[in-house]
Image 1 (cartoon, helix red, strand yellow):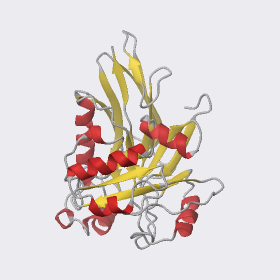
Image 2 (cartoon, rainbow, N blue to C red):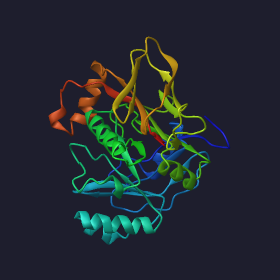
Image 3 (cartoon, helix red, strand yellow):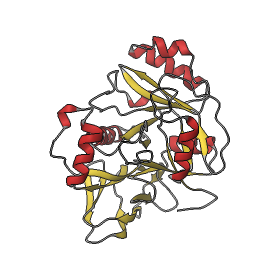
Length: 331
């Protein structure tokens, strides 16, 4: 969809450099982002404010930092000096987090709760959707923990929290020959590729997450309304779910307040579209799942389970390959 100058921009909202524990310098990461055909990249080093970012033709760089504590990890986007160094050092309790988060908000930052259901570094503070602007529902190559986070996100939607989502590769380095920077990638439907417009679109929920740049892509519209919007219900309200590059044997699942609303398994690789009647208030969102094969299971064991021993060698359930944000309906 594209109108009034709006278009989809693809990027990575969670990445690290040698300024914390990443494997690449900022300059090397920029070159990698360009090779991955990203439109934007947010630098989120652990417990350190971003240094001066250069202007790069064709790539929007956005200031960020990741508050990384035992109680939880959160990204703070859009502000160069987002909090003071002493705040990184002294933030230990939930009350500390609220204080630090509020200071960042006062400076204009967008706050994202990172990988709250990660078995290695979960969100241990009070898990309150109202405390943040955005949820990182998908972290790193798709794995079991992302399924749990998606279930929690659906619960928040059912409880009335219109919580936007992103997928963050949490890029530190590649393993062997695997390119992990854009795994996953987040597409943002924004007015322009300026940092302000990219972040504004994220906060408005105009996002969809893909396995990588140019892969399966889910969009949902209802009339002129797009992902993140709230539609006034009438007796003629419908929503259309559009999926580009739905792969053979991959399954599209559409969810609403009551759970699974619709599903379709592709018999061949194709673009696919379905229109559903909307009769009840609530939300609509969708994801595509796939059955992990031998090769993906081995990658999972190497890249994920090596850090989460209890998941090593586990029989993986269907995992998410693409995931949309939500669109909402009210009377």
